Image (cartoon, rainbow, N blue to C red; front, side, top):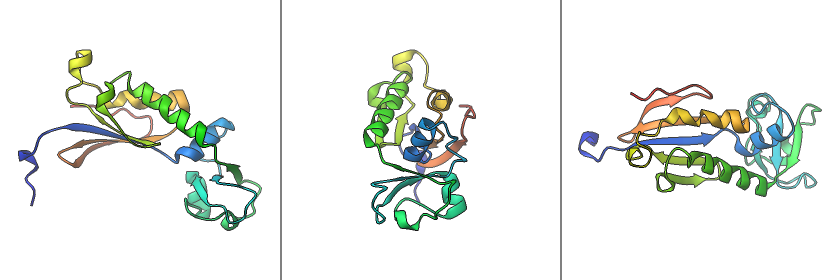
Length: 171
């Protein structure tokens, strides 16, 4: 068994955007990313096209997930199917990273993927005079209309979890 108390101590926040591609498309269309029925595909004119992202409601109500094929999506007028716009997703990801950079220095941000970043919180007081607070990322919802999950990690295990738009109090 690992004795985590003997390992270096770091506080790390993991930010994972919820159904990132589908959420961006929903917001762009003026829809609620959590309740809209939306799939992002590689090419909606090809029945075998791969579903690159689906909204939480589409996953829940129809079981359509990343990796499904376009022909597996039921013919339902409530379902929106859109072509992927990778450039838009990358631009949004970069804008989010710039927002995070308002709270922590660049070297404290580790971008894991287009929709997930790890932020080292300890040591950030050297730059701003106080330690970065994970709840500052609640601005993501306000600025982009996007939902996320944030976890604050200690010693490699989950210390606390933040639900969308709720503050995580750092003790």
